[in-house]
Length: 100
Image (cartoon, rainbow, N blue to C red; front, top):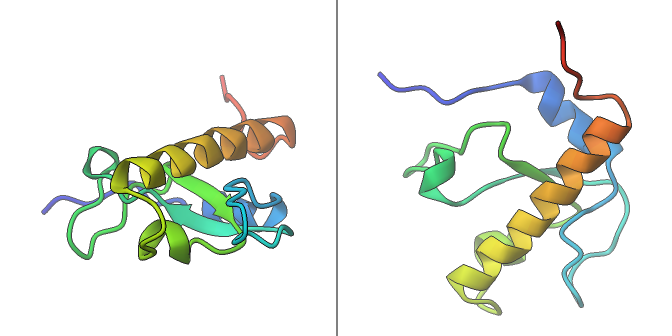
């Protein structure tokens, strides 16, 4: 049985990061919640969420998940930019660290 990487502490940290998706006429700003990748390359499959390390902080990710405003490629790009901003924020606030 295949299982994806899960990390409750990492997901909890999403609530300390301002929304990083920044979708015009959709995002309200404020602190985010975990928005997992919808791409199979990140472990998404059927009802299985992507690995927890492939998340972005989002005030509302319905548009990226189920919306029709953007193409699949545009949604992936929006999420990817948000993911990169989220990871940088987590590193800067010390929520992610290298342990020797």
